[in-house]
Amino acid sequence: MVISMEYYVVSVIASIIFALIMKVPIIPKERPIRDTFETSVLFPTPIIALGLTAVDKVLFTPDLMSCVLIGLISALFSKFSDGIFG
Image (cartoon, rainbow, N blue to C red):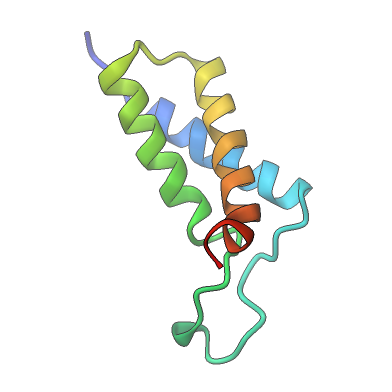
């Protein structure tokens, strides 16, 4: 069973697209950027998608639909993470 990189790419692209649809800022608004933990499209949305895809790969057999669902879940988590943890 060989899992190619396409599942990771699909989940990252889906998470970025869903985050943009939900109007998550592309980069943090605060300056300097290195001292902020504000969520954005570029961080932590793709990293969460990669992690969830890796978990899906270990526990289940991934397919393209699950990768798109993982992209949606990671975008939702990134959008509301300030409310959850802040």
